[in-house]
Figure 1: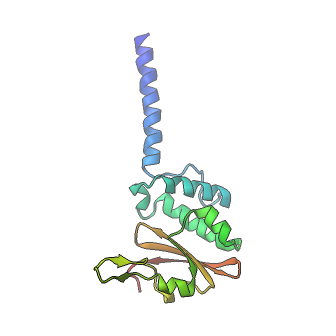
Figure 2: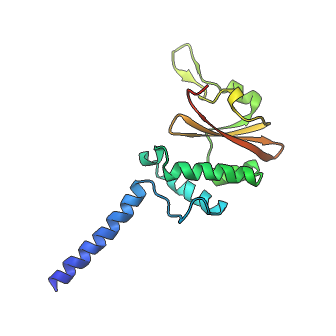
Figure 3: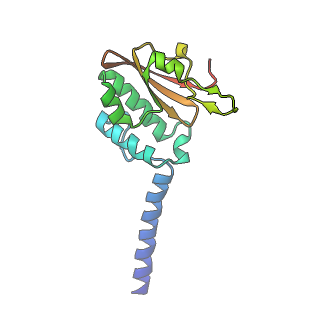
Length: 161
């Protein structure tokens, strides 16, 4: 009887450990990211984003794949601003090009930076309105909207001019 109890506890711990490792490793619960519909990709992206997990910040992680897939899907359907925001969550920046230029990072008189570190305007797609997501403090996913529809998205890595 005690062997059976020990065996069942060990099996339970093994299952719990593998589930925790999957979450700790920033793994998706989707069978296939490539074949998943946009709603499922969006839900999974927001789930992994909520962890604030450093494993999600590695190149080739499921989080990166989900972010790229969702970006492509949103452009493909010509998503509105509200659809982009509801699918991806709070952006790093959103606004018109004139405001975009005014948000650039500058150093104040006290030596402290103000504004946002954004990709240079010649590296972003053309559009009337921009939604920018920052990943691992150096990679940007920029959505350009023309009218009320997403026209294009582009990745930019800080330092690549």
